[in-house]
Each structure stands twice: as C-alpha cells, then as structure tokens.
Image (tube, rainbow, N blue to C red; front, side, top):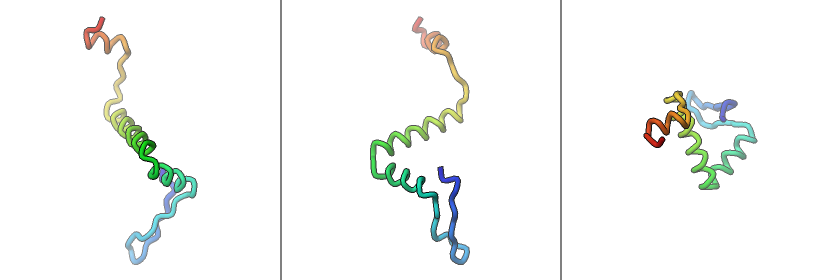
Length: 69
C-alpha cells in the first residue's frame, strides 16, 4: 500500500501527498471502521512477527515441546 505516492513540496517542505483514488477509498473505509482497523493492525503485527521469526514448527513438534503427547 502507498507505493505510488507523489509528494508535493513548497520550498523543500512536504505539503501534500497524492495517492491513487482506490487507495484513498481503502484508507477512508479502514479509518472509519474500528473493527476493520483493528483487524488490519493485527494483520500488520502478525506480518512483522513472521518476518522476525521465519521458523515454522509442525503441530507434532509443538505438541512434543509442550509435552501434550
């Protein structure tokens, strides 16, 4: 999201950001719906955690680690 942003400057100071209309509609809907915003923030958090810890464990490994078998 927001890969296609144009920044309009006035005397080297950023004044406006121009984004595609579809992205504007998405952001407007997201910011006006608390549940959607919470879901999106949760999604971003999960993506961040996945990037920090790329290791994956099988269900069997997790059960063994937790001594559930």
